[in-house]
Image 1 (cartoon, rainbow, N blue to C red):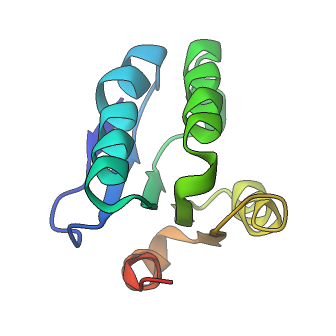
Image 2: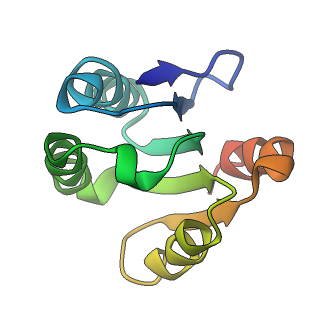
Length: 122
């Protein structure tokens, strides 16, 4: 399930992933949130609080995630991934080298730091 994160700056869209994450979650929560940011600001500042294992994302969710990434390829400015899964955190840091914008991994204990980082406009 994806739940929008409240109380973020207007130019930042954040979601918390818990339990199983499906294609429906991405279509009804993630994609509209990203589209609203692009429509209003022309760029994406995104925070993902990953409170579930990546194995809990269904194949359909991964496909929708890929579609979102490609659809908005040039609008990504910053992406903060917050998780205690060290492999995901390291992957996020490496991902920044191959995509437009910046991507950075944070531990769950660093959630406030992640919010501060992703909120600073590039």
